[in-house]
Length: 157
Image (cartoon, rainbow, N blue to C red; front, side, top):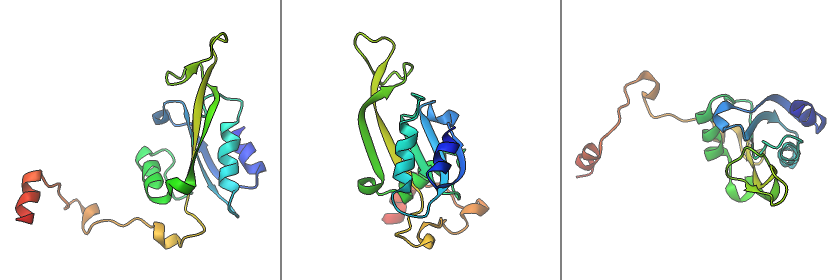
């Protein structure tokens, strides 16, 4: 149903997931869009869905591995300007199973919570090359090593 809702907005949707690593309250979707504003519409559309477990919604580009929490986090860290690409909607319907949500007095089991939308897609305002991952030399060959604090101190002395 979420997939259908997003495609009706005009997005080219690749995948929609409620990943187990998201604690049941997170939805991640991969999409391509034609114009600014589409991703925010999609984030709000999912947050307003009849399911109460859409507390955190993250949009990523198709090149992000949607099932990999580290890849989704990397997309948030490198493709998201918090001032522009994250918004919070306070005081919304929450899941009765969300321990962080506030119980609604006199209306057990209903709860109130905030919701967050995160646009971690490659933005049209940037060059796609800006978002290609860069790795330290020999990183993938396994020759990179972790340095202890003592090793770092020796290097800077």
